Length: 200
Image (cartoon, rainbow, N blue to C red; front, top):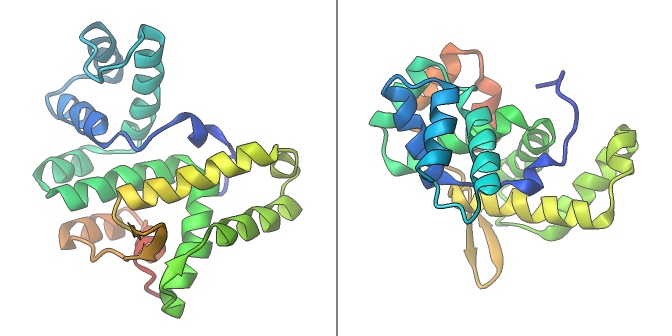
């Protein structure tokens, strides 16, 4: 996680849960990355409006897939939807250093403190802090940071870490599926358990 550069690439993506699920199933069937990409584009499995869009979506989703070993693929395919959404989020967090740091430093802290909601201001404070640590982030436009803020919170709502009621983003930390928790421990990813659930 530490070696990855900070990136604003998440603003080009969506949570894409159904698309991710299709790609994981293809991986389970034994298809390689190139075969999955070809199938997604030629058969337009993701329902993209244009071919270049299908290619971009496939590229991003395959980047997530690369984070999954065979054990996690099988675990995903045998899990319920709640756990599958969390696995999708975990692969995103593994590929995006800044987003992981946001979940670990902001979301986890709020869970630990028992705070009810997360506010746009919390994300803004996070970016302000990161600007002092990174020249790259300091050089980003305000519109980039606003877009990322929206992505961060939307992805968390899609994974059920937040529940939005009347525009309030209520913190709803997940109870991890025991098989997923065991898997994360087995690959030395206990930091991910802490980030998502707020446990010490």
